[in-house]
Image 1 (tube, helix red, strand yellow):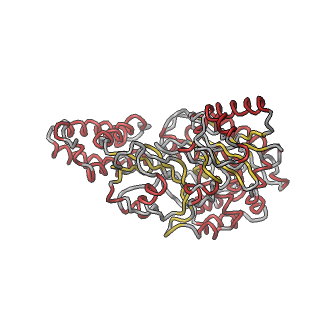
Image 2 (tube, rainbow, N blue to C red):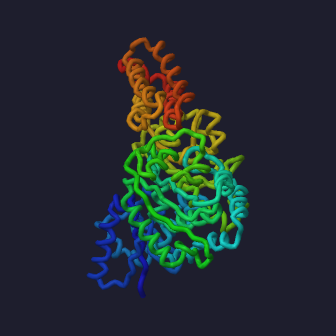
Image 3 (cartoon, rainbow, N blue to C red):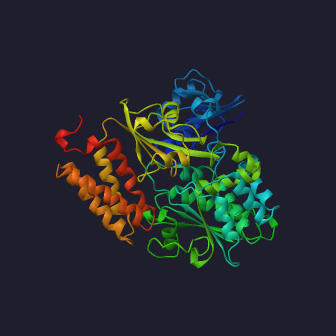
Length: 517
């Protein structure tokens, strides 16, 4: 009897040696004349257990991890293909691993379960059902469903997705576009990559539905160049989807067209901002456009354009399939649905955690993160990428909800959570925020371009003991100027991490000799 064995093929698993595991497993199977089918699935998002090898048994899929190629002979001897629990790497039934079982996976229900490029497996696991329902609805009804769901942008600004779609729907007739912002550049984030590498048809389906909703016939995935595997998978998935009739001049014979292609960025963080992204897509240097006009009215090539993050578009198939209310029933307040949280940095159990909005940061850190990897006390947590606040222990009881975070001067952003133990120099982190902005600014507006450069200099003076009080006051004024005068979020958000350090970790801004040990 042939046994199916799953070895993940995403970037994280490959970096941890998954390809070597797959190769060695195939070699040993041939030597021992074992009947097995090797499936290269996507990651389940349990990065701390990668490579996670799963075996299909009568009772369900059994997991072993983290597995190295050197572990395989002993694993096979111990009954790997029978799901035997005697080996130390045995994790039990995959779905019952507590770290995974406690999650609420709506968007990420399929990752790690299916072969990412198999349309057949995607459809068996409810794929393209949302699209089929959308084809039976009017554009206005699709938009209304997205509005009712409460879905908001998962890229940082948290703007209501349905309102953006409605604006494009009501805009001038003619050519319209759907643009997916896949320029995932925030520190500690990898959820977009997991979507694209582990469940690419979900993103494709979401973009087709968006096109049907607003009358757009062409879509672009703007992908960061640092994701070569995601590009190969997306290109292949798009080609297969077109061959199967899901893309082209008549989607599933409906007479409604939607074409899709991938375009590569060139490593500029600023192109994560939607108007810079559009400039880059049009073949120009990525520089921020003034608003108005909004991209929804005058976007790509001057036409009405929906620009959404990967996670926003990936949530759409579930909403159309299960109904807007099923999505809205998750979450708290104005933060509806689920948030894919990415645990990274100095963390014991890093990976992707999808939960309904409302869990506290402390619960996330303790129940899922498991503390620091170094074993030292946790001191600070940065949420929302390099321009997010550094949160001290006194703020870890804040619920993961857009409004609750805004109330404490923080942002949820793309859901990246980076942990730092008590050896971190928070003064250096404040300096890094300004330096990062100085390097990544498009240079179009003075508050961002010059303000960040002056910010580095002022922080250096404070840390050197040069009139610290006067320079702290100057730093505060500089931050206010950047917040109020910058053209986009790059400059206006850079002060967030700086001010959080001044407020909560001021001792690390003292001269080196006087700092805490």
